[in-house]
Image (cartoon, rainbow, N blue to C red; front, side, top):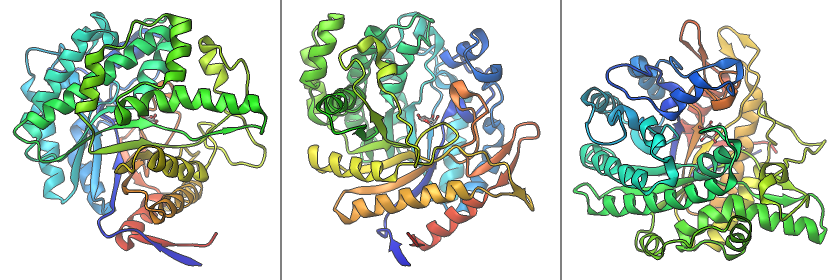
Length: 456
Ligand code: FCB
């Protein structure tokens, strides 16, 4: 047995997002988002579930903050629903929406929990999708106005900001899925990702100029360490390519103010992309982040199946299943060494940035309930191994400053609907009752002791 202990100022938190927990989809002046549209007007969500009610957090936030307090959390990462603040994406402000987040922030601060705001966790105002979504520079401008409003209104009390959650997912993956208008199109995904980076840089610039610029601002990327299936040269090539599209395409504009040459070359050949505007690169260069948020759940194992075929992006990124490994309910491999290798690599290749793990967690069956407590040992085992990997990275001087578990409570898991449970707290969707899981009690103890005993 050895005891591992985290630095004194390490931030233990949980993460959620607006669409996944709030519900109240058309209450008190909120405008429609693209997710309201997707759930009501397509058939792609499992069981045709919707986020109309979700965890009803909009009405129950006080109770939820009390749960956070009982957990002993130091910080809470949540996202703001842009169409709750600006129902049409820009222009007129919805005061009731503004009040909701003011109240939530007050409640958190009164309970000594630091609010960490993500400005954009996928719920774009529908009216902005109608004028071109993330491929449009008009939407970039609307985002910057929204961000500016947020910094000025909440920035005296909120000192940690995240511009975007997982651009890879809401650009490349959603476009290749055809989520927005049901026409899969990888080229448009690339174009959107370029606009999003410009929006990010402009928002950071805005933050530095705002009257409340004494906090920190960053972005959250979903990064996954890529391993080859075999040692063959082709598999190595596949690693370079998948790592390029999934990781470097997003890290390098942010941390190096450039796009990776190899991927740019492939994308240009295939899709004839317009030149990346010089002013975008200048803006990125002039507006560095204070921290990098990393969402990490698993690693990626690839083999060299058509390594140059970008249209089959999703087929290429094959998550190889290894017999001997454990997998979550999402089908994602439990791969703590992937987190360790990723952290070391980011630290080494990108000049030692400050990092927060802004999401990590496990979807489990959660079937066994004893004395009203969910017996989720598998989740505890997962987190233990990941915490240990994170701790090892800190010992190697990686500047990891905090860790946010996905998620506070079970919630609407996008196209999986309510079929996947990630919470430390179980939600009964019929009664909205919140029930503690064993992992929640365990996490409480970790936070209190700022460490734990490892027996592996
Ligand atoms: C991430 C998302 C988050 C949640 C987890 C499971 O990709 O950021 O909203 O759905 O996956």
